[in-house]
Structure formats: structure tokens, C-alpha cells
Length: 180
Image (cartoon, rainbow, N blue to C red; front, side, top):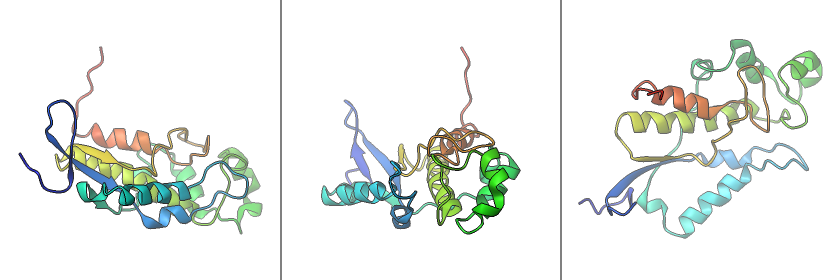
């Protein structure tokens, strides 16, 4: 049995599981705005706790590759992805119609680096699925991900890109679905 790093005992069988942990140190710098309950800096705090408790030595820590437009468009509409790529705090007043159309506003505000944030968290989830598909890990973790409320053509519930759907679509490349 392998007793080296990048693995954790898991389950009653005691078999070491390879863990891929996706983390970008920049993710904690994104800011939804004053008073908004979504706080990406909590991801950095979680990473610091993992380091403090010595857990990082048991995982393969990877910086995610940013999701590309074509990755995002596997679920999201092209015009919605294009909007996310182009919207900035400086340009939002010129795009009021699109803000409303794509449900970007109070719950899902425009902030500096919005598109990069989406690329980062979606890239971690898709990257985890790729690692799982290729048998390179048993467990994939992306604390920045899980933003599952985003719809095909609009933001929702603090979520702009549905990284969960994107990760599942990646997993389906390798794993068959059995409908009961």
C-alpha cells in the first residue's frame, strides 16, 4: 500500500485515496461588493486552515487552468458568455438592457475580474473531472466551485457560471449514465 504524500486514508477499507485539490491564490481577491454575503476570501481562509492542519502534504495541490469560452459554452449560451467576458464595472451603465436580460445586478453584481473569477472556479471543477476521468485521482476538491445556481442564459444566486454542470458534462465523456 502506498504511504506517500498526495493521498489520504478514506473509508473502512483504509485504502489510500489520491486527492487532487484545485486552488488559485488569486481567488480570494475577488470582491462581490460591500454587504454582499458571497465572500471569495473565505476560500483563501479555508486553504490556510488546510495548510495549518498539515493536510496539504496529503494532496496534490494544483492551480486550475482557466476555463475557456468553449468550455463554458458546453452549457452556457454563447451570447451570455460573451456578455460575461465583456462586462466591467466601468461599462455596466452602457449595458443596462443586457444586465437585466442576463440577471446580473444585485445578487450577481458586476465586479472587477468577474470573468476571470468565473474562468478560475469553473476551471477547477472541470480540471477535477478531467483528473477523475483519467484515473489520476480518486477525489477532486475545488472549494471555489459548487456555484450551481447559474442557468444556461443567466446568472442566479451569486452564481454566474454553473461549474457543476460543466464538471458533469466532462465526467460524462468517460462515464455512462444509467437511467433507472
